[in-house]
Length: 234
Image 1 (cartoon, rainbow, N blue to C red):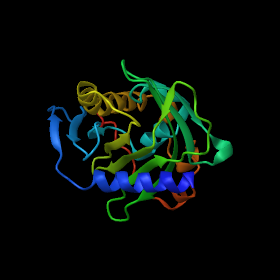
Image 2 (cartoon, one colour):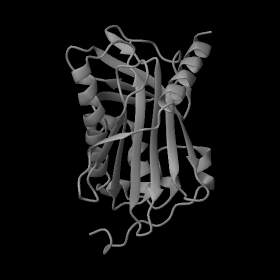
Image 3 (cartoon, one colour):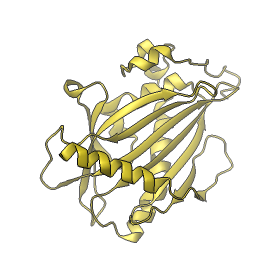
């Protein structure tokens, strides 16, 4: 019954998220490798949906290598201070703890992620939703009742990758307006800047899906265009 309630909440959240497709751009830097940010109100929710976009001089495989390194989430995911891959529950199940910004309490979420590739554009989408009921709740921490989160990795003609980070979470309680506005801008900005920084590390310069720490069966059927040449990456 609890799983059915979570599923219905997730479906309802997705419906609300896409009910109004008008995004307001709130950050538009000139540099290609800087983060653009959009926000969108969601009916009945205090926390806005947000979207960030950045182009990076790295391949999709490098981006996926960073995304799949769950223990390092606290180094780049906004306000994350703990992340664990719950491998005993499934290859696609993770736990993420988010440090609250005063006066709001800490949040956490257990997630399930799927990977899919567009056969035309070759863009890969990592879609994450809640998977509650699989991991005990913690005292003093609010469990997110619903989440709709997407990382979209789109290969560009010069070998660069466009990364779109789009998310909305039901915070499980009231969020002050000033804080909701802060999160909507800072979350995609900090997350994509941090992700871009990690992609420079040698350990993430992988050349095959078999080198990734994630183990989705669908990876074996995906196409991965080469990354940028030394000239285009400059």
